[in-house]
Image (cartoon, rainbow, N blue to C red; front, side, top):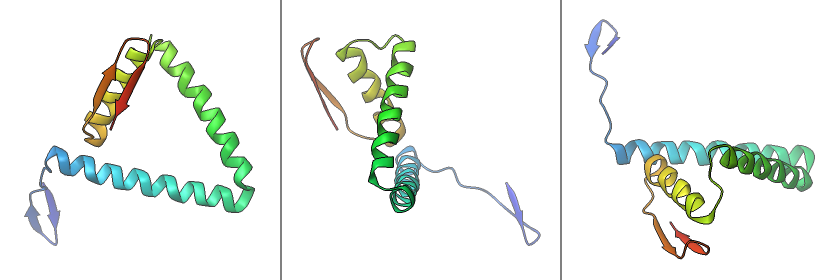
Length: 102
């Protein structure tokens, strides 16, 4: 409930799909703005370095959660993308070689 100009108004609760759409658009907008700024100020090499550092950090984070094989990785990625972004997700293949389709 909020009060605006002395009038009480109910704040609507959005459906899950709408929340995911808004989050996805905000996240992409923020990322593109940061990337553009970094490239303009520091050059494309800075993005390459940032991506490399991010990948190393992500790998350490996944390992710390016990995600240490292709199936666990695919399932973790599928859970996040399905629940955070609302993506339709399919994991196909064998335990040692998988495809993650978004």
